[in-house]
Length: 340
Image 1 (cartoon, rainbow, N blue to C red):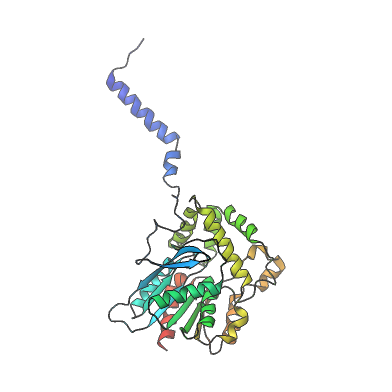
Image 2 (image 1 turned 45 degrees about the vertical axis):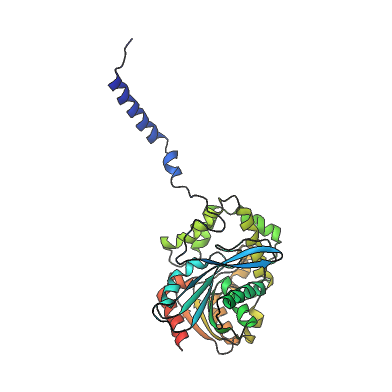
């Protein structure tokens, strides 16, 4: 019988461990798996400090997160309100915030209830209610007049805010807003319970692929916002977020604003990425109808005619989020409009 001395044993152990590590890569792959993220994003840093407005809605004590960024230098005394889209929070406005504050504007960026760092309640969501919450925030900050900028779902909210508070919204900017058409005639209805189940079925792959549809030219830096949603799915509280998401889908579907565009009094700018074909509930639309819906070039021109005195800026070869995909062009159009 052969005995191994201690040095030989140590050598063989090292060889065995090395071989085991190579053969079983699971430990290496685990490091690449996303970590859970809370549904109110406590672990995720925003580009500027976040404050909270306490609200009581339907007997629930809630918090509305927001950023209030002062202008560089002395400022020009004017304020801009930035309203985020459905699958985003205020953090994705970071470049627009910089462009505005560098040009003397104070910028207010709320996370609406159900989004970002704000509470995720099970309540009746309405654009009227979200607009009222946002007005309360501006009142708390002693802001009397603002330019309201809304992207995607934020565009629907911005339009409702301008209709509801015309004395406050002196200017309105709609960046590829959803709701330029009424979805009800061609998007089959689904109940909140069905939409909730659909939210729970989402996978990391489906979320990442969906985010890519927002852009004509995908850059890896855009993936940050998809990863937020991917990681929130891993939270034990994710069902609450899924329900608030389902409820806000119902809000979008049942509360169109496009029939009231002619009543908007604010001086208005429409910025439309021409490659956008977004339709909320697009997967449920009959194939033969798809070429006729979500046609943003046509919808932008139609809406510009409906809103009195509206100005339209069309950006070729850009998708749903011009302020990310071609930020310089978007900021140029925004700042020129603000200075008119």
